[in-house]
Image: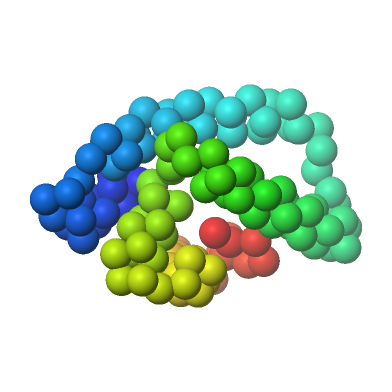
Length: 130
């Protein structure tokens, strides 16, 4: 999926594709290592009540938004998802926040259709998807 997001960026940018697009895949590998480390460190944290699960999702959304804010402010490198958002918003002069909501919604719809096709029922797509 991430390689597809980089490819879409390259298609949109055409001849002005640069290091920012090509550096996303190695950065993604580093990000994946941090996700694995986080999963290892929080493996014993399993909220069993719905309210705690919901609060965990809300807190995670705020932390993710803050991380994306820092990523964009630092302007050092982007993960493929944010890179695509940035390319679309800058190329077409659209509001970044609105582009993020639209693309995230498209990803959730793709996830819903994929789950229905491969599992035959709605499973695993709930609050916090994307």
